[in-house]
Amino acid sequence: MTMATQQHPTSHARSSKGMRNPPRGRMSTLLSPIATFYALFLLLPYFYIFWLSLTRYSSTQLYVPDLGLHNYIRILTDSYYLGLLAQTIGLGLFVMSVTLLLGYPLAMRIVAAGKTAKPILLILVMTPLLVNVVVRTYAWLVLLGDNGVINKALSGIGLIDAPLPISGNFFSVAIGLVHLSLPLMVLSLVSVMEKLDKGLFEAGESLGAGPMKMLVGVHIPLCMQGIGAGSLLVFCTVISAFVTPQLLGGNRFSTISTIIYQKFTFSMNWPVGAALVFVLLSLNFAVILLHSFMFREK
Amino acid sequence: MVNRIISVIAWLSIVFLIAPLLVIVGSSFTETDFVTFPPRGFTLRWYAEAMVAGGFVDAFFDSLMIAAATMTGVALIGIPSALGLRMGSTRTQTILRSMIMAPLTLPAIVSGIALLQVYYASGLDAPFVGIVVGHILITVPFFIRTVTAGLESVPNSILEAAESLGASRARVLFRVLLPSIIPSIGAGLAFVFILSFDEVTMSIFFSNPEIMPLPIRIYNYIEFSVEPVIAAISTILILSAFVLVALLQRVFGIDRAFAK
Image (cartoon, rainbow over all chains, first blue to last red; front, side):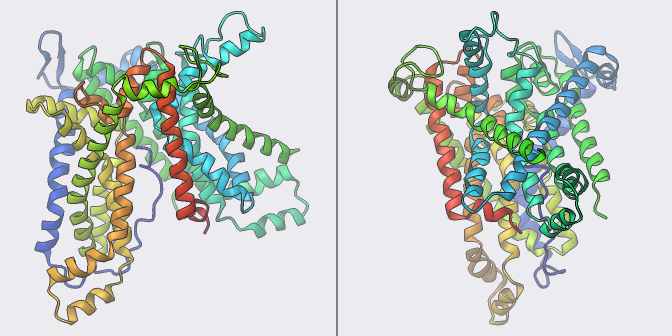
């Protein structure tokens, strides 16, 4: 998912006909391995899950093939599942906003940095990206636990008596996810900011615009594409993330992803879990559609 | 004033990104039995322990084997696909390419569960195959994207020259087109290796005590405790990531990749 929604140059096809006289037979032969692979391991599993989502839960037989939309209706009317949905979307929006607030200034400084500073800054931003998500989550477990580094340090200097409530809740999951997705936001912004015409800023300054006016009136509007792409990437990463909310949220804070996992492992309620899968997918696609509607190329 | 605030936030962001990693590196040298920062004393005991206890070395080799099998599978499926894509008209290419990229928009947790259900239903008992199939599913789009980009840079004129000199279609494919995309195949496979080695969500579903890649081994540990031995393992992984990124910067220039 991480790279899924990143923009990439798709259509740089140089010839309109491909190779001359494409032999149809050869082409389908070459594409048959991937077609078979996707049919077996992508289409078939998803069709099966969709069918499961239409069945009814049974405590004795796992599920009974009494097909209908009851699982979906339950999720969309039950206050527990609606709360879960709101909690996941809220987490996505919160992490997205924080990464934007932190990432925008950092991206500005990276783009403006000199020949020696820029590679160093980029290495520092990209290193966390290549550190395994389990290791990064472990770091936050160590920092945020009741006996963690932060609580020990604060009580050591006498600032707090009882440990701060910074583990197994919204805060700990959000901070772990900000750490996870900040590099994605920064890189999306940097790639757009690098293409900005520096002359525009000189023009703005020579016309007497102050730094605040330059930022809000010139810089941010010119970076809207990067802001949009980065926000979409971060939001989709957050609502689909599993490892970080699972480990940092404990049993006390859940997202759609962690509940899906739970339904298929511990509570063995496959039909509701399967319906949640399609709720999560619809949420992803809805956000992608919203993004392409808001940021369509003119 | 505004510029000052921007600089302060930029520095805070860098500290926020890096500090947690430095805390882990530091605390891996502690002499205490629990993780603490700053570390007390200095010892390499946890590194020694990581080499013998907890099955971390076995897990590392499991990860390597899974990555190798994934790379083989991806190459077998991905190279023909990229070549086949190149043969279509622009329109066909666009449609086929977006179909091939489809798995990228699907959350790994969801694909993992879907695959697991089919695995259960099939009655197979081959967790290694399950993990590798899952990894291929996640990585093959990235590979095809890289190789397709390499193929785009091979001009049609070269292929036409070979054809007009009497080379058969198969000969053009295997003696002209394939050799010219070896570098992008290499880059794509390196990418696949990193992704597979790093993969967690898909692997969770298929891992068992016999086959368990390194990230899952760590995951299972930290679900219950945060011992210093994990800090030692993590330090090794953090330093490898740093060296890898620094190397990429030296060889390809990350900063240039973003410039116009």
